[in-house]
Length: 91
Image (cartoon, rainbow, N blue to C red; front, side, top):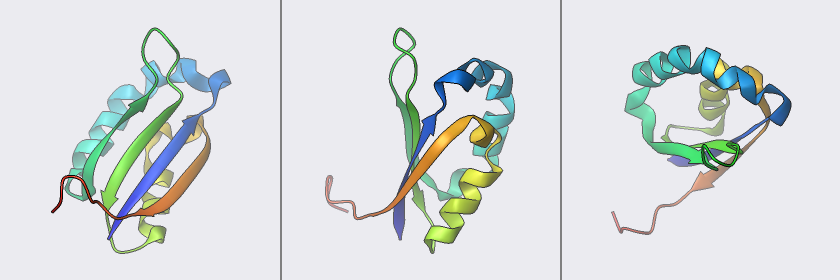
């Protein structure tokens, strides 16, 4: 089953992104088999607002663990997790 996780970045902690980036990318590489795709909302010119992941896992608890173990988890102010049913492009 696919899930969508939107991890909102605490603006007060956004300066920690650069410090944590290499650990985050190492983590993402280790768990890449469950990530369908991901990215950020916002831009370098306008402060990043959130990091989003589409994950292919068995249940919502696995998504929660994925977020918890992400080195960026300390900068997330909140996380929304929703079931996701891909329609475009049709699988």
